[in-house]
Image 1 (tube, rainbow, N blue to C red):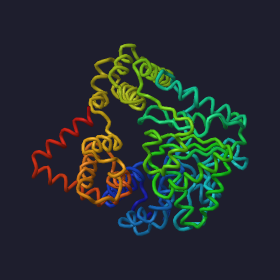
Image 2 (tube, one colour):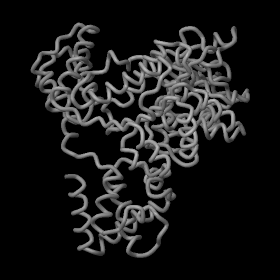
Image 3 (cartoon, helix red, strand yellow):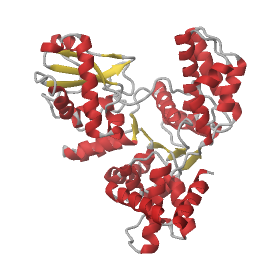
Image 4 (tube, helix red, strand yellow):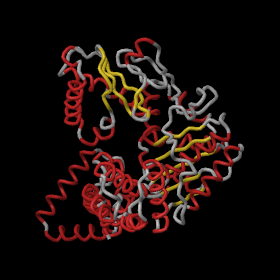
Length: 483
């Protein structure tokens, strides 16, 4: 690579490329698709990047390779190709030097932009007899750490855990008990863990089972890709041949892919195939699905996971601390574990993060793990308990009740003043009180364009400046939502 043969020069170039990409696509898109990419090496005219999941490899290669290539060429015109490979345990294989000497496995390496061969119409997210030995659930986002053995049970999740184990046992024995099963909770309470655990248990019991685990964005990506390649029929048939379908993050399913999910669900249930879905809200609140699909999900077994109580938080912290002790040999005093369990009340991932931060602080500074260290290190996690997580569904309910406008009219195309103003206020509150992007808010408000949301936000901001009573009214709505 001419002037960029040394590793330091390549790293500096990669930092400049990342900065250009962030400026070009915006913070949200960058965080979704580019933040987890790493530069592995630059050999001749090829840039070798790595990503932590096969889905991310495929998505970046298919949708952003040209943009990345252009960003590199602003510094070095000799760059000719972008190659994205899977990174496992911090290492990407194969290296480019190896790739030149021997053929690559098509399940590990995404095709380079120069070759761009037509891929099979059946995405490799299925465990079947053709999967290589030891390559269980090839191509899926299954996490090997998320099994029933590593799941910490408690009063908040005992029903969901029991149902998940029963589903796994039944599926392994070619029977169906509850179908479909819908697990819902707020973020970080174990939905994804249970879906992964079901997949692991069934695969361990019967390696011939066709198991498909898809997050909603995976499902949308593969459906959209199949439509673009005129292989949608093959995609549908592929899904309908599965024995166990697990769909995660259902709330993010949008557009035609949501319609296709409805068709797939009906077909699978008719054929007595097991379907398990997870989302952050009950089926009735998934407004992106039509009424028939919501009714079908509600007609199965709906299992909530509630917020963790103190005993469960303490058990989770103890489990994570024991794992860190076994790995690093450090000591977590009981008062520290009690402090974390009482102070960090948001969700399980923050409990994991609290233990990880204390491990890092001990490793980096040599300071003993004590309550004062925890107070100093975990400040932002503790403060997060002070603010209630506001959802768009909460906003719709409060605004609908306050202005006496039915929720379905807030999502409709009606343009009368008695509907438009509450709708604009609801969009303003969604932007102010949630982390959702403008396009996401638009989709949740009846499939509107992000420019409509932006217009509503600016309109309400101006009205607040001009109308003191309205400003006080919106502050009241905010307090109602945050309480």
